Amino acid sequence: MTKTESAANWRKRGHDAVLLLGKVRPRVRYSLPGADLGLRNLAWLPDWIAHHGGRPEGQALLEQADSLATALHELIEQSWRDGQPPPAKQRRRIKTLVDDLREYAPIGARQQAIAEEPEK
Image (cartoon, rainbow, N blue to C red; front, side, top):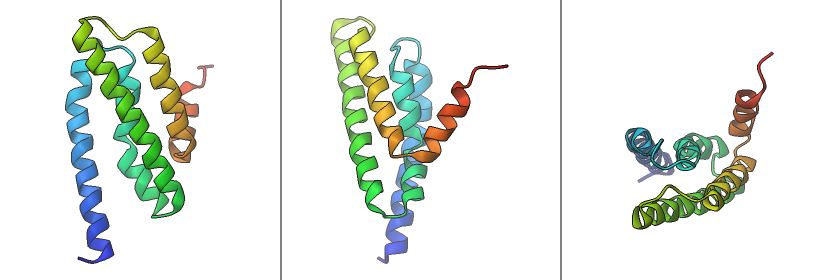
């Protein structure tokens, strides 16, 4: 398998995961406040990785995404076990990890800045 075929295979797997996240997000959006922000940002990951084109920043992006995914897993698991919405501390952790992830995703950071601009 060539490098191009391998990259195409991973990109397809990433987009398949995005489709799955798209189906899961609406189901957890209101029952798990704080999870939606993390899930939305993980959905951009395949495009952000493709943007980095194999440069070292892509590895740092993957490491940040892995931390975010782990924190989301912990948030969901604790909420499921407790039968309660995620505590504020966990929601803040997700927000911080999203901000850290976006440092390695300059396209996403610009999009977030535009989305968060106050309306005039």
